[in-house]
Amino acid sequence: MWYRMMAIAFLTNGLCAFGARVLQGMGLAATHFSLYLAFWYTAGLIVSLFALLAHRPGLCRSEIVIGGLMGCFSSLGWVFMTRAIARGLPGYLVFPIAIGGNLSIVAAVGVLLFRERLSVYGYLGILTGIAGLVLMAVA
Image (cartoon, rainbow, N blue to C red; front, top):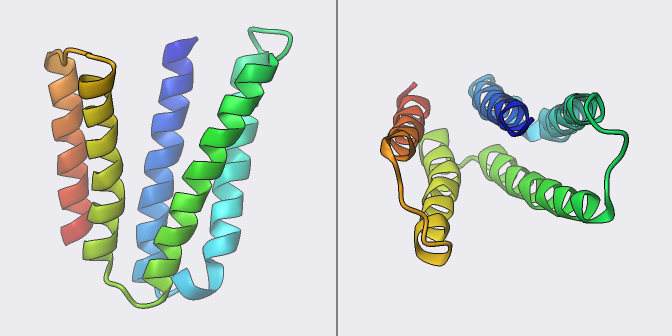
């Protein structure tokens, strides 16, 4: 179940970043970012609920609270990022700072706070994230 949820999060978040870059490239970030984000967060919520409720009858309070907080913080981050793009900041600066900051913070918290040891897959995941940032920045 955990792998299914992580795959959904990976795909929806990655597609959201790609779409935001396309929106910025087409000059539509200033006028369409709210609709775009509403679409992606609603779609992500629906897909995640179907995947979760297919295996369990319901959600407990802590799952709703933690999921809601994660969704709020994530959506606020995307709102600020798309507003920065809409106000004319270049995408080659906005995307690496916003997404690279998340990647760095998550890796640092895992290693420093939770004392996680990175495996080969962990390092490959970080390198893949960095490669994706470089591709988004130059494309």
